[in-house]
Amino acid sequence: MTDTDDPLRLLADGMLGRLARWLRLLGYDTAYENDADDLELARRARAEGRILLTRDRALAARRGLRTLLIESEQVQEQVRQVVETLGPPPNPALSRCSLCNVPLEPATPQQVADRVPPYVLQTQKRFGICPTCGRVYWAGTHLQHMKRYLGKSLSFWSLENDT
Image (cartoon, rainbow, N blue to C red; front, side, top):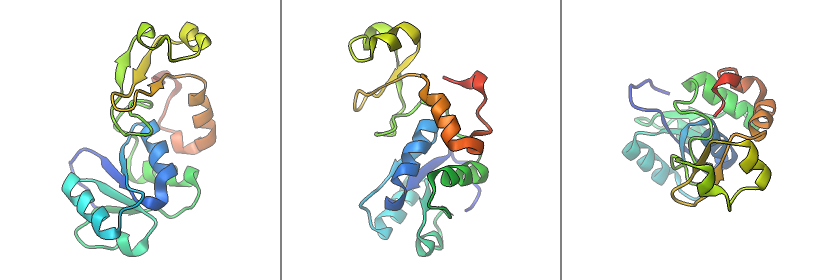
């Protein structure tokens, strides 16, 4: 992995789909290619200025390509490795769509009233909506579940910064 002043943008290969989704939820710009070959992955990573996350040692060793070889098969350890190596996410949690990787747009309770459970509408004031797929996000109890699941990987994430 090489250092750069470019914005932190990641590309996960086909073996790291779960990691890509977790990283998006945490605030990392993480593209995901589940069916691209090594040549396509390398081309996209270079063209878009992304760090390629891979478990493939040969791919990670390619010259002229910024890569991070992911060592573990466990997603909690994978997240920990990314955070420890690349630093905390550049964006707040729940700021990107976990499916599309698109930045969420703010939405009012009125805009999402017909798309969230009544209890959520009563207890939450801030919502985000994906402009691509329309999925709605809010900071509910799932944030605490995420923290428990990932454990020490989230030491950078204080309760006061919850979105």
